[in-house]
Length: 145
Image (cartoon, rainbow, N blue to C red):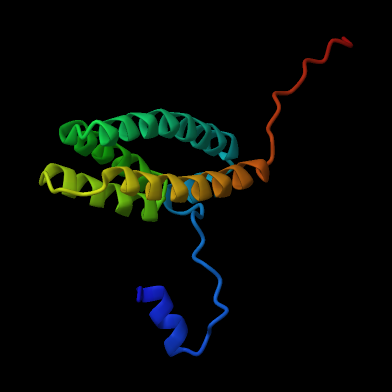
């Protein structure tokens, strides 16, 4: 039984909500509070584009059992996940990285699939957050003079 299930059972709370896949925190939250929501939006957009590309690289490495490439890609992704406060994804990347670097026999495609599921949930949470950010439009020039 995992920690969340154990806590829910011990507290008698069997209808507990699943953990939130991602929430803006840390430096990103500080930037947003400082009025830099457009920067945060652009950073999240770039992160999502980059992660999709890296995800494909990780999947190809897992399928071909290229453990060196898998370890390197999951290491790079782990750093990106930590910067974006996607801690569950960083943890999954760390697991993949450790097992691949140790050249352990694992079902790496299943591990990547699990990562992909959590990534989709995280992506949805990030997009939802970005959609709620105010849009800053540059001032239009006044040509009436």
